[in-house]
Length: 400
Ligand SMILES: Cc1cc2nc3c(=O)[nH]c(=O)nc-3n(C[C@H](O)[C@H](O)[C@H](O)COP(=O)(O)OP(=O)(O)OC[C@H]3O[C@@H](n4cnc5c(N)ncnc54)[C@H](O)[C@@H]3O)c2cc1C
Image (cartoon, rainbow, N blue to C red):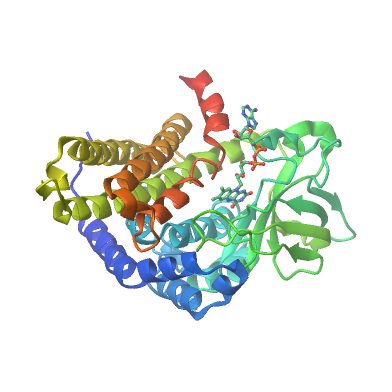
C-alpha cells in the first residue's frame, strides 16, 4: 500500500507553491482575467513578472533530470505542485504544464543527442526570465479529437514533412488551441512523413519557433484560463535538420500518443483538482461568515450539503490522481486507463462543484467582485484539454 505521508521534499515543494501562488499567481491571474485584450495581457508586466517568478522557483523544470539542470522530481510530487499552483492560478499552471512537454520529450526520446539537449533543454532549465516557454502542436484545424487522420489527404492544412536537401521540410497548420503557441521559443510538432503508412507514417519534430516559415496566430480570446496563451501555428516550408526528428515514423507512433495522454491527462486532472479546491475554499469561507435566516449559511443544511459534496469530490479525485501518479512512477508512462479515468472524473467534478460553489454565494457568486464566476469559466476548458472527455471515454471503455 503506497504511503499517504508526504516526504520532506513534497512538504517543501507544496509549501513553496502555496506561498508563491498566494503572493504572485493569484493576483496576477485575476488581473489578467480582467484584461479585455489577450495581446495586451501577454505583453503586460503583470504576466512577465509572474512567469519569471515561476521559472526562478523552478516550476517549469520539475520533471527534468538534474544532469540537464532540472529538479528531477518524481511524478507524485509534481502532481501535488500542479494542484497547489492551479489552486491559485490555473491558467499559469496550465502554461507551465504545457511548457515542460518539449524538453521532456527531447530528454526522453533523444537523451544522447547532446546538440539537441544543449540547444533546447539546458537553456530552458537555466532560464529565470520566464520567456523560455515551449509548446507542442498536435491538434489541427480539421484534425482535433480525430488524431488518427494526419495522413488523410482529404483533410486540409494537415501538417506534413518531406525530405529536403538536408533534413526535413514541414508544411501545414496546427490548431488555434496550442498552449503557449503565441509565445513559445521551441516546439514539438507532429507531422505526417508518409501517408501510405497511415498513422504510423507520422513522426515528432523539434522546431525552433523563430525558424523561417513558422507563423503564429494571434492569442485566442477565450472564456476562461486567460493567463494561458493559446494560438495557432503554421509552417510554410520550414527546414529542420535530420536530428530534429526525435520520434521517427514507425509502428510505435500510436504508443507515443498513448504515453503523452497517460502523462498529460494526469496533469490536466491535477489542474482541475486545484481549481475545484479554489472554488470550495472560497465558498466555505464565505458560508461561515454570511448570515441569512439568523445564522451563518453554512448551518443551512442544503448549503452544507453542497460544501460536503465538494469536499468529498476533492478527496476522491485526489486519491485517484495519486494512484495514477503512482503508476507513472512505478512504470513510465503509467496506466492509460487510470490516467484517463482520473482526468474525466476531475474535470467533470470541477465543473459540477464550481457551479455549486457559485450557488453558495448566491448573487455575489456571479459578480466579478468575487472569484467564483472566474473559476466556473476556467473549469469549462478542462474537459476539452488533452483530448475531449467524450473521445477519451470512448478510448478507455474497451480497456475496462
Ligand atoms: C485548454 C486547452 C489546451 C490545449 N492545449 C493543446 C496543446 O498544447 N497542443 C495541441 O495540439 N492541442 C491542444 N488543445 C487542443 C485540444 O487537444 C483539442 O481542442 C481537442 O482535442 C478537441 O479538438 P477540436 O476542438 O477540434 O474538437 P472536435 O474534435 O471537432 O470535437 C468537437 C466535438 O465532437 C466530439 N467528437 C469528436 N470526435 C468524436 C468521436 N469520434 N466520437 C464522439 N464524439 C466526438 C468531441 O468530443 C467534441 O464534443 C488544447 C485545448 C484546450 C481546451
